[in-house]
Image (cartoon, rainbow, N blue to C red; front, side, top):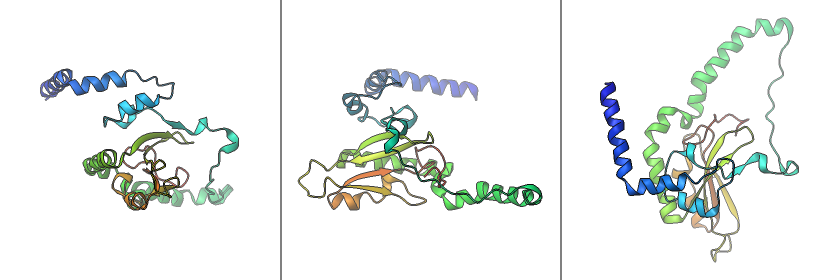
Length: 214
């Protein structure tokens, strides 16, 4: 099995070495500086390819915004118990926590399940391709205040002649949906500029879709 796996890697490596498009992609990717925001020229060259989002350059960081402009919604949790009450409730709290994280989260947010992301990966990729090739969408990577990377697509209609082109619609999909397959067509056809994003844990966005990360 190890020999077959090694041969597979060797064949893939040789195939990529001989592939002109792949080598052109590597040349563009190698120009990226992880500590600097990429230029628009570099981004335009990168957007010709669809590749692992972990290698995508960061286009926006929460920390780059001046403190006076930052706003974040704080999620209030129930008050913590103390003393004997805390000790007596530990078994119940443990069971509730385990059920919520092992079963509950996957039932409420099926779009964050690994197997779901795997099964729908091809459809998501094709949807993203369609957004780029037909509607001129631009892909971006955002770093949120908690360090998650959020996958976004932006359809810019500001230069169109439509009066609504300078207004932005942000599409927030449901618990088992992704921006590549979602509602973006409706506001786009109405003339609006559109920003689609995937919830934490959905498709290429990292994290989990809990309220404090949302």
